[in-house]
Length: 91
Image (cartoon, rainbow, N blue to C red):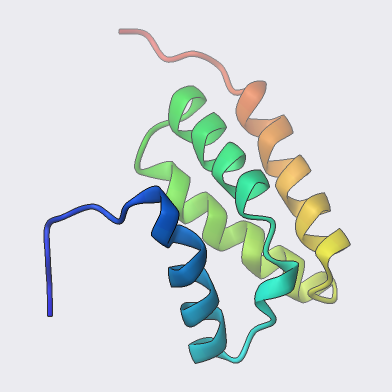
């Protein structure tokens, strides 16, 4: 079933836990706040469409490094650093 109704904030953890389980991942290592911060920084400093794609790359980098919580944190920090230093585009 498809809906255009956004997910309420209180349901976010439930959704992520269900998706993680469905994908065979450990939901306990998902730093939701950190990943949302990365998405925000990329969306505001690079481009909105770059946010989900950047989180995909963060996930790939973390998995390649070993997939631990520390790997997710390191990949997130690298993405945030790059996004915050990204040159502003002319408007």
